[in-house]
Image (cartoon, rainbow, N blue to C red):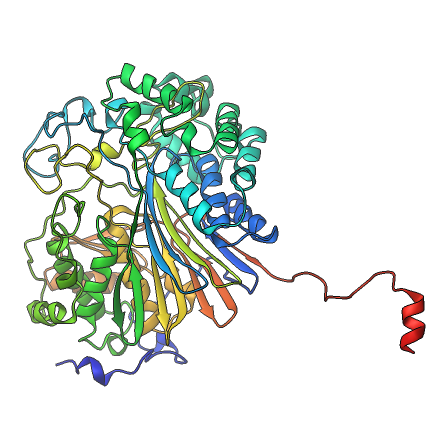
Length: 579
């Protein structure tokens, strides 16, 4: 029997070698970065550089975040665009905490039966005739990214919109080299990209997918970004560019109207809050499920000696899988727009609920918690984790949902819109069913941790409904196993929503075999979820880490301005007077 939570010390493994108790050992592939002037981790080096450029110019973490996100719409166009959606968790220097919800919504003219489902059973439950909710204009939801990014900049930033857009405009105009990651994504989706003339012209020149190292320019998109810099988000949300976008979408069958853009509103929400072994954690609330379920799973684990059982052992992995299945069984109760569905957040994140569910875990065999996750949320997302020297912290996950969103470009603009309608249940009358104005749901788990009231970590990653599982394991790695920040983001992961157990190949075959013997249907995976970015805070020192699962790059700002009063040509009269 495991001891009570109170028997555990905070950070029991800190200062010890976690490998002494581990059942799984691994070597990190990337190098962490430590600095005091600012830290940025994004999933592309040019976006991380854009963030640091803003802080070097005197901007704060919010300025840096918006610059990085706009840059990612250029250099990571398969993952994110300003015609998409996302959430930012922000901790300001004065301690204020907010979750900015810029998730997409359904158009006002949308109806619960506007798509024709092809199946009432999983795995084709969410698919519709002609892939209408997945590819093309009818798949596009009302976007929140551009408006929310600009609102964050106006409310919390210090630099003008044209300044933070400059790096993105520069890279779109001059071009950039295609990474292997982008090239692979183009090749994987080439059949769909070929169906849209503008997509084919950009990514399939001469009928062939762009290869790694190719030089990609986006002149139309550069002009679009320049127009936004001049006119602001109103240019899209009810303005001339919005008219152009909607006119094209409606010609292709979309239900979207210009009024949908004009009436879009972001939401400022209070983060959900929990604790784990003396560490306070905050995350995004519904319609995001991640914050709720990470806290729920941590509450379950608080009754077990995770440090004692060791990282990557059969026992620890079994406990993690069981916690994931319990959270999955509850997930549908906390993954709907709270404006449409009552969400029992307080109960799900309570310690009492963790105590209630913990006895359901059998330490000897895999359990069945009647879970089923009905979601088309895509793993093709991006994330930034950014902090400045003043104490401002932003962890933000943004996406156009599937790879290359709806897989179309608005002609003459370079804009790749989302395919967020793919996230609504095409069957009417259910919690996740399509309704006019309804906000999509997400597994986004951008989270910040505190110890003794001071920031300890900020973390996030892409990966759809696998995101909460990865953040949950990150917290265990840091708090229970005492890993370094680099080890915590790169450590092998597991995932399940029941019954299949996805196990990364970094976990040894003997652990795979032992889990199978306990009844877990093990599926070996090359990787689970996406590239994690995290910052560890130690006083004024910040250490940033990005993992091998994406093009993640940590960039820090060190040094600083000259000591006050230093002059290259000292006044000789002043020097004589001092002597």
